[in-house]
Image 1 (cartoon, rainbow, N blue to C red):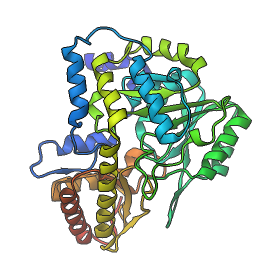
Image 2 (image 1 turned 120 degrees about the vertical axis):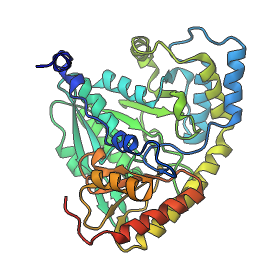
Image 3 (image 1 turned 180 degrees about the vertical axis):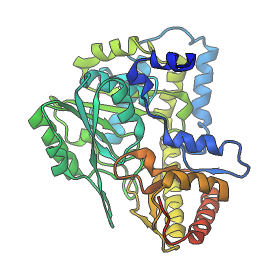
Image 4 (image 1 turned 30 degrees about the vertical axis):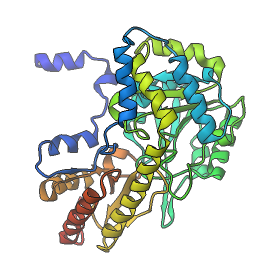
Length: 398
């Protein structure tokens, strides 16, 4: 055994066996390619708006560089309460919110709060891989329940979800609208999931980060629309997508105020709070960002339609138009090794796609394209992809 192998074997097995990201693998392969159009990462191409940056800069100038409230500044939690009342139509108190160092940290804290080592959490798949990986690293067991793809879109199999519940199940993770499929839970599906959770005493970790990226409506249905005060729900969210703040790493959790001390303790033993000047920028995002969000959603819907139109015109692509989020999850006739194909697409036409194999059960034969970008780039990427697709053999071996 080499010294390097010995070091690796000395690590916690849960950490050592953490899966590498299939998305990152393609991104690394594509790095530095001239003319690349990157559709593999889950972010738009717009920088954070000036009205947000200027408030954060003002916070720096005002000396907001010290330790701050673990739960989040009162100003930000008050803004979050206003935002939830305005967008979800629900009365919310500032004490219901915990500000976190990203949506990913919100998910990690929700896992820590609900699911112990050896316990199970159900989730719908194909899914963003970070949730299942984070749960496994914490010693929990992620249990995938596959979404069903139909011509009209993806749907949740509630019977399969119910059949997957065991005595070790502690929680259900629900990302709606979904990354990568765009599946958006209907009110009926949300009520059915809530009913299951109530009957079995399960927690719901509700990831509604893309709720405002909903097409043909103001927002997607939310668990908040049907929740009772005693429901075991942790709503996790982030500033990343709606306000083009991916690099800021600021998120939040909404739950019953009685859980606030526990959430603050979990925050204390990870980041000990989010920088105050960043929270000042987040207040501006919530209070003054509605027009920016509306512009992004309108642009994304047009980009979605451009991409679908050009790809389906090849006669080789199967796709269910997403009702929400900003991803197209599509398959190409006969193409099963999407990881290798994603590398080939980078090499041949300089378009970066995420391979469906990165998103778990039910995703292997698909590709994910993020279409929250300038329309001219989407037009060019769609043209390159369509040309590449029609040049491929009718069947491609795995």
